[in-house]
Image 1 (spheres, one colour):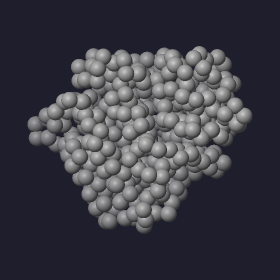
Image 2 (tube, helix red, strand yellow; image 1 turned 90 degrees about the vertical axis):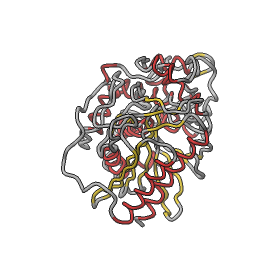
Image 3 (cartoon, helix red, strand yellow; image 1 turned 60 degrees about the vertical axis):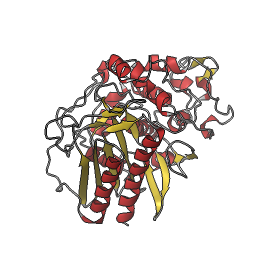
Length: 413
């Protein structure tokens, strides 16, 4: 679902999962019953990149994650590494499956932005179009104004819209999670939550698309999904399937609709709740819609990132627009981060081109990784434990994931 940041705080950012405020309509589901079984490059660390990958997953595991899986892929093939176990309570405690499914959380936003930019490239939508143009009267009340918010503002997180997540969850506890894990809300209900108070700001009336004030809000991508449906007449899930998943052959990537389940093979997802000394199994739950619902694998997600930055999904003008960024602070534990249209950039010591990335979290799953500017190399990772018991523990896991990406990419230079 949403990307938990230092700015928002752990408890507030995870509250939506306890309140049941992250879901999509049942009609928006497409299903992948089994992970792909096509011939693959042998699993396990090979060469400098493979060894760096293994060190990285071991380091994430050492922060307290139950299990970790990662992959690096380029034109020559792929190398994977894993650490930890698939289930802490299972007899024998076997390893994380090589092709484990997991919730990619806010990595979904890059897919959504890609669909929107494809519509722009087709001349059906403009980045300077206002939300009011396509969703008249939808963003109103308490000073919120869809006439001042453009498509660019949504994708770049510069709209000033409030987060639809609320802390009215009855407590951030394992009991609250179990009570609410089967609940759902529609996109309109989520938007109503966000519009219940004044916006953080309204973009500049004279030039809203160039607004540079930034604040991460899942609501931006809830609205982006609604825009896709308004422009195409089809649910967001249909468009992301027909435009990205099917053309790229991503057989292990799908939108789960209102199903709270992650299919097999997978690893159990765990969350460390505040004041709890043991992790709670949190594999079940709704992951949102266009802001964070996709389920995938490290392999499929890497294929998507390489195709996107390799120019297979967007025309040059739209890919360039995606890479136009604004500076952000206190989002992740890294310096020099900039946010574009559904994708972010940060510097990497030893690489002049840095790395493009997003990342995502949901209860029990943490998605990470990045891709080079030319799409030549992608690194993807999945950790099956979310630490929200302690800010330092959460940040330690996040830093370990960032180091994994950095060291793997530098090892390939």
